[in-house]
Each structure stands twice: as C-alpha cells, then as structure tokens.
Amino acid sequence: MKPFNFKILYRRTALVIYDIISIVASSALALLIRFEFSYGVIPDQFRTPIERFLPINVLVTLFLFYIFRLYSSLWAYAGEAELQSIVISCFLSGVVNLIGLQFFRVGSQAVPKSYYFLYVFVLIAFLFVSRFSYRFLRNLKHRKNNRKNDIAVMVVGAGEAANVIIKEIINSNFSTMKIKCIIDDDKGKWGKYIQGIRVVGGRDKILECADTYDIDEIIVAVPSISRSQLREILEICKETECKIQSLPGMYQIVNGDVSVSKLRDIEIEDLLGRDPVDIDLDSILGYVQNQVVLVTGAGGSIGSELCRQIATHKPARLVMVDIYENSVYEIQQELMLNHPELDLVVLIASIRNANRMNWIFDKYHPSIVYHAAAHKHVPLMEDSPGEAIKNNVFGTFNVAQAAAMSGARRFVLISTDKAVNPTNIMGASKRICEMIIQTFNTKYDTEFVAVRFGNVLGSNGSVIPLFRKQIAEGGPVTVTHPDIIRYFMTIPEAVSLVLQAGAYARGGEIFVLDMGEPVKILELAENLIRLSGYKPYDEIQIKFTGLRPGEKLYEEMLMDEEGMQETANSMIHIGKPLEINEETFFEKLKELRESSEVEDQDIRPLVKAIVPTYTYRS
Image 1 (cartoon, helix red, strand yellow):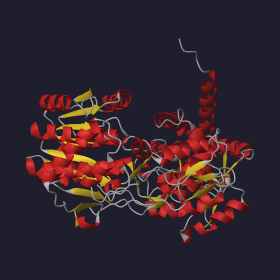
Image 2 (cartoon, one colour):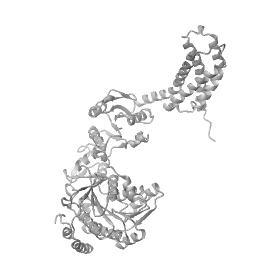
Image 3 (cartoon, rainbow, N blue to C red):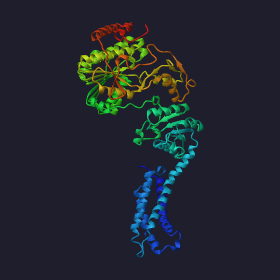
Image 4 (cartoon, rainbow, N blue to C red):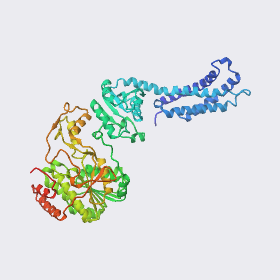
C-alpha cells in the first residue's frame, strides 16, 4: 500500500487557509477601494449583503479553485496554463458574487458595479502572489546555486528555440551551464534581454565576447537557417576553440520538441556548406511501392541506408543480400523493429556465385534491383587487383544477368567518381561495371542504369572514422597530401538521390550526383580536430604520408566525352552513354575473366585494353 504523503496535505491545507483569507480580504478591499479607504462612509446597504454572502462566496470560490486544479498543480513550474486557470476561476467567482449578492441586498440599491471588478482584480493578485512565489523562490535559489557553475555559455540566436534552451538551463537544478551572453544578427534585438540575458550583438561579436566572457561552450540555437548560413557561423565559432553544440533542425520547433537534451555536438557535415538535397518522395514512392526490391551489399553503409529508405516506401517485399552476416544481421534487426509490417527476406550469398544469384532471382523475382555490393577500398584493391575484378566486374555481371533473365524491370548500379579516368584498379573495375550495364541495356528488356557519386561521410573505409580514431588516440592525424581534395555527401543524401535517379531511369543512363563544392582533406582534418576540442599542429599533429597507390589529388565526376543532360532534380545529371563495340567488349571481358581466375597478377594491361582512360604505374 502506498504511504500517505503528509507533506502534500500540509501544503494544500496551507493553500486553502490562504485562499479563505484572500477571498475575505478581496471582498473587504474591493469595498474599501471603492470608497477610497474610508470605512466609516460605506453605507450599510452595501456592506451588509457582502458580509452575509461571504460564507457562501468562500465555499463556492474554493470549489472553483478545486475544479481548476489550483490545489494540484506543480507551482514551482507554473506557466501560462496555470495563470489562465487563476484568471478564469477568479472571474467566475466574480460572476457568482454578481448573481448571489442580488439575493442578499438591503433595499432597492444594489452593490456598486465597480465592486465586482475590484474584487476579481484583488483576488487574482492574491492568488498570483501565493502560487507564483513558489516559482520565484525556486528560480532565486537556482540562480544562487548557478553562480558556482563553471561552464560559461554563449547562445547564438535570439528566437523561440534560444528562449526555450535558455529557460531550461536557467531553471534546471542539474545544469552546470551559466549563460553569459546571446548573439543574434537582428539589430532590433541588440541590447534586449531574454530571461535576463543580454543580446550583445551580431556574429561579428562572437570572437570578442568569447574572450570577454571567458566562454567555454557555444550553443547554436537557430534551427531555421540554411546549411550554408550555419557553416558561416560555425567557421567563426570554431576559431574560439570552444565546444560547439546545435539543434538538429527546424522540425524541433514545429514539433515543440526543443530542449537541452536535443542539443548535439557539431559534426563535420555541418561545415560542408551545402543545404540538404531536395528529394521528390512521390516519384520514389511511385515506382517502389508494392514492388519486390532486392539490394545487394545490404549490410554495407550504402546498402543498409538503401534498405532503410526503401522500407519507408512500402515495398511488397525487400530482399537483402550480403556475404557478411554480421552487418546484414544488424540492419535486419533494425528494420524488424522499426517496420514490423515489412515483408523482409535476408540472404547470405556471394555475388561471385552465379548459380546462387540465379537461384535467388528465380525464387523471388524482384522487379527492382539495387546493386551496391563491391570492393571499394582503393589501396587494398591495388594489392589484390584480381579480387577487385572477380568481385566488382564479374559479380556485377552475375547479378545483372540474373536480373535480366528473371525479368526484373529495373537494375540500378551504385558506381563511383573513381570510374572517371581511373588511376586505380577499383575505379577501373567500376568503369567496366558501367560498361556492362550499358551493353546489357541494349540486349534485355530490363532497364539498366548506373548512379555515380563521390565519397560519403561516415561510410566504411572513409577518412572520417579514421580521423576520429586517430584523434581519440592523441594523433597524429594522417593526410596523404596537403592539396588532396574530395567531394563529400552524407549517406542519407546520396541514397535519397540514388532512389530518385532510379525513378528517372529509362535505360542506359549513367546518373551523376552533384556533390557540391570539393573539400580539401587537410581542412577536413583540421576542422575535425577543432570540433573535437583540440588545437591542430599543437595538441594534435597532422602528418603527411604521401599519395597511396592508385590515388589521385582530385576525383572527376564525368568523362569529357560523355556530355551532360539535366533532369527534373538539379542535383542529378545524366551522362550520355558511350559508343561500345559489344562484340569486342565481351571478347576482352572473357579474356579478363580467365586471367583473373588463374590469379594472373599482371591483369592491369587487360583492364587497360577495356578501359582506355585507365592509367597506372607499371
């Protein structure tokens, strides 16, 4: 049995006694104010009915207070709703007085109308003092304790999100933060105060105020700004060497879901300066919904995100294929949890095994295929060129042929910018894959297309996880060359564009994703070190290791001879298919297969014969 809480009983009893006194005092004060505090001049015909009605007034008003929960609210956290309850209940008490005093009046003269307005006003004042004193005293106590807090905080933004964050920090008994100043570019807000904290100026004041107020942490609370605007602010903030946090996005404001717990550390994606890509979800839904979709490499970074996004578009069935059981098991468990209604099939298989691929396609008959399985690590493939050819080239051949023979409607190859004028075997192998799907497109009814994009942040084998690991170990952070640049996109963005490119497919296209502005890897490393709270070249060293085998300073997205066509999405372009002598191509492909199967280490000349733009060190 739950023990009785005497503490609550004492508090509510005290409030009831206070309210009784307040009701009596309000009645007396309203009459005194009406007659300018001259008690002797108050006529009996006014005073007598008020005194007679007072017991009833007290009981009815206490009942109204109970109905409006004035005895059960947490007044230490009182806000607008509680204030409304006080005003409405006091107004109704005034109405009760107006009606009730008609039955107790002496003679024909009624109580002055001003009495009722004064009564309601005084009663509201009494209740406001009693209830909101809880909150005032609590805030006073917290501000006193907050003087000991040792994390000095600057808030960038003086809008609704900032107001909510500041309010929570100030009122929290557990926060170790102390807001020192607010920054906002709106000149109309300069010199104004939010929760008692001054808006000191625009973004040009960030560095100065960080030094003046000895700031430890900066909270960027402007979720409505674009990614490019955010980058401009972050470029200034990171020079302060303060820890930087921000809100995830505008939807936090829309959902009313803004709090300190939603703050996140600034990620390297925030410094890329590109706004999120615009996706036409209806076009994706139109060709994925109620279809059997198969994804190879489903456990990889791209493949798993493809599965996540496809699952939200209501496919009839999603078939996930991967050779590595651990990673595909993780995405399987995630999808089963988040989409229990999804018809999900998970198969362990190697794309090198043509018989296994044929069996899978014959059994499940997917109408849409996303082929993401591939060896992608450039230096490792340089040391094992035959494996890159067997897996990437002939694995793609097996999957594409199985898709065509089973009657798949559409086949989408995930390609790479490294396929353009390749300088490594991995890029060259992916260029051959593009050639395979272009030739298959002319031979079968299946619509074969490729989607080519650059590096994705956080993918398996990308530099970001490596840099984070090196920083966590105290450095040094290794960069191959001070001038090396790469195009970057987040995994969800890239996959969303892949899905939309698939919707545009008519067969034979090589879709090229606009990756935005190229990023210098050296700047990426420096920014990541700063965002981790360290000084580059001082606390964390950067070491240049030299270009790795097959690596070049920059990646191209489109071969010169391919040309460029626009699509309905400005982020997606189409490369014109190249002229390929199919008979010669398949003869050389057969020779390449035989060479790879006998573990010929001198396989590069055969690759060069198929991909003339491929260059390598002999």
